[in-house]
Length: 414
Image (spheres, rainbow, N blue to C red):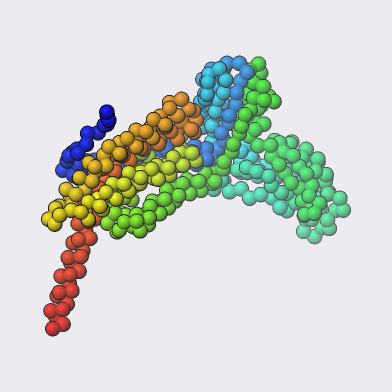
């Protein structure tokens, strides 16, 4: 005995209600496009710049206490704290907009102090030559190694022996810049390696949680991304999704014809915008992994659409003269309905457990995919196929206009 999820030969009038349903979906998608300008999405460290710190304690520590200590510390800006994994692991993710303790103002102060120290040690003969640029309007500070060179003051002759790397390191430390300095003899300059925010994090945790935090093992991971890099990641993410949609447009155009391709891309765009609206409202953190979820959703969303389009094309070829395209499309949707729903359910069965039990980026990926699959399945029936009718009418009307124009041209030529 075969148990059918969807009865055979269903005749649900999808096309009869397509206009109000499609209009509602377009309105929701428009909200997904506008809302980010009103309510900022929850951009992850990769997209807004900052530092993500994964740490654990040997003993239980309340989340609020961890948050309070980081928020109260002036060295950390815009802090959020989240406990991850099993509670017994006492593991947390701390995110802060602070990506470096060496901001542009501090860097300028360090330069002045170093310049004075070098002048004093070399009897006003040497001054700073190479030094990193830091524009406070474009970046929040220096987030990596940089070089420093010493050059003679104009009109002076260079000293035979430059200050030792340890001397430069001591001067930088006195100027509140913790760094490891080495001398590059080949380039005749100093390599400065700031210890960065890691020391600041360890200092806070060891001072505030001396019994719970292990200085050697408690810091699991620390990732820092500059604000300028985060902005580039955001633009690259948008471009990658647009490129995916463009490639889908080309593929469907070659696989079927010009009527099918734009209909499919419109449906994928609506799916992406509605899912992004959900992500924004739920304030799910947007990371590189969630961008991968959107790209996967574009690939999944085209799956049902292609199957239905293929059935439509077959039915068009077999249809009797005079049958409306709307009826052909509606029949194709009903014929593929069981397959469409079963495919979506089996995919959700594999993804939903991850959405429930996983943590972090994996959970966010699964949640986005679960919601997006439902939207894509719905859109394959109420956006892709109705838009096919819209473009079919458009091309038919365009062909009629071309024929009428040719007839007029032939008459005028006689």
